[in-house]
Image 1: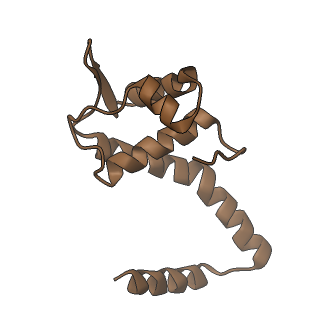
Image 2 (image 1 turned 45 degrees about the vertical axis):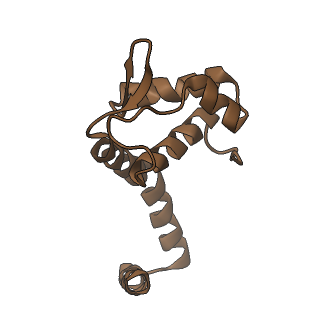
Image 3 (image 1 turned 90 degrees about the vertical axis):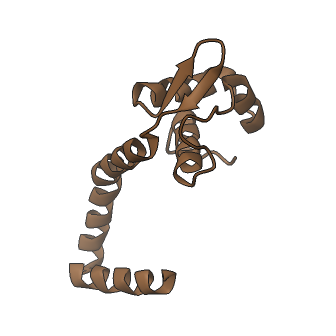
Length: 122
């Protein structure tokens, strides 16, 4: 994994785990890699991986079974979408609006590009 400098590493690990859940690679009530396994596979300190797990547990995305490991919560996908929408509206959208103002991009141009993108994806 190539880490970026603009976001803490543990949050980049969270994003990676969220992606695995959203794509169905990690399913509801399925055991996920341990802190040590994930840390080793990503070549990060286990404490960094643990911080990511603590965040996901606090946000009700994963849970722990004593002596068994970490598992994906039943409604994890719904919770992740909620969290990522909040992040989008808080962090991404304001910067996009700022850029739109600087480049004099009208919202209608954005809608047209979005519709074109949607059609290409279909």
